[in-house]
Image: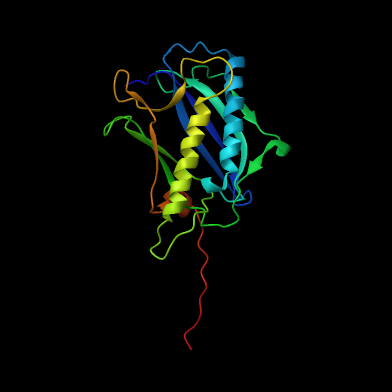
Length: 224
């Protein structure tokens, strides 16, 4: 099983006032599978992606609290085996402190409670039909039923849809319509489908690995 060649954009940083780290990723694909990208060209795309990512991190509608900090990003070609096409060279930026940005909202949920940004493609089921990433430091309020507010969901879906559109419209030469895709290795090669819709669900998501990593403190009180 192999992948169609594509680019992997990853970004992340710290949250909970530096106590935890976070990261997300998206895959991009164009019509040219042979990666005619120079290192300088990749850095141009990466710098454009970083500028767009700063905007989504600082957008209150995106739901990141003000402990979430963007500190790094990287963009690398991925070969048919799912590995970096140039293993010895990573195209990345570590942001200087003055160049870092934080989330915009001053309300907090437990760090393991989040919201998935679901990525939908033209395919209804099977490989490459959907993908997702999670909002770090999610700050969405919940109602009496424990669900996210519909207005909050709508604003978030619009913000993340615009983010994907912004990423696909970087300045400079058109690298054969490079666009967010869901990419699968289930085939020879597997399918790659463009992201057409963003979905935000009403039920909070729980990141079990983050929750299970917490050491629980207990308070014991004797019964009088």
